[in-house]
Image 1 (cartoon, rainbow, N blue to C red):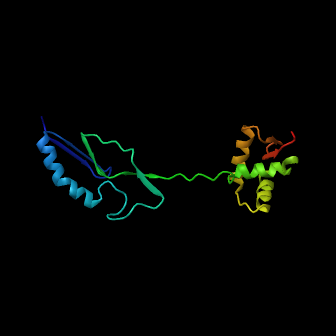
Image 2 (tube, one colour):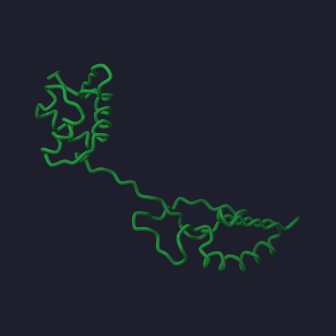
Image 3 (cartoon, rainbow, N blue to C red):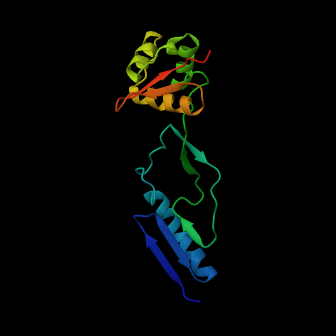
Length: 156
């Protein structure tokens, strides 16, 4: 069997193939050096992971390849989930319950209506939430010519 070593520094990949003694000996020499150098890590040496990341314990190890972070958990970003009732769509539904949509309202009107309740949303957020509510049948919408959509609810 032929011994082979492939190191791709930019990608953070180390491949070692060959006899068991060769691979184990080379790993014993290289692994401490790679770890200390932060090989394959975009963070500077000795830097802690950002606070919005948590370890991912679903990493799989393959006996033929040695990754730069072998033995270290992978890092995965947390996804922020808006608490129940605090999304733009939920707040628009509150306006609907109060009769705000009895007349046709544009995104600017809705942004203003939300602002009067103390909620700050941008027009693109309102438009996305409005489309979502329309697709779910919770709001109606119409369009005059090339103008923007107007949202309303006349089915009480």
